[in-house]
Amino acid sequence: MPPLILIAAGILGGAALVRLAVREGKRINRELDDARKSKPAEQERMPKLRRDPDTGTYRPG
Image (tube, rainbow, N blue to C red):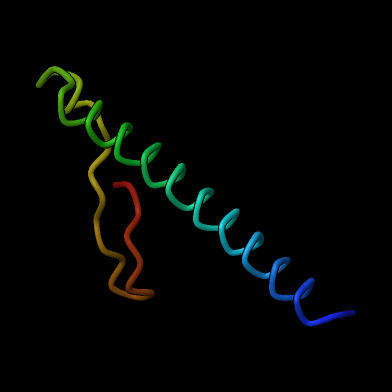
């Protein structure tokens, strides 16, 4: 393949990945904003995360 076609394909693929990453970041921020704006009673019902001392991961509990 000519190098120009490979470069163009790489640029298009990179642009698509950036677009997907931006869209996902906006979706996550929208969910976080909704959670912050929720009523205090709803926030209390949300499970709290506790650190598991054996594995070091955070789990509901």
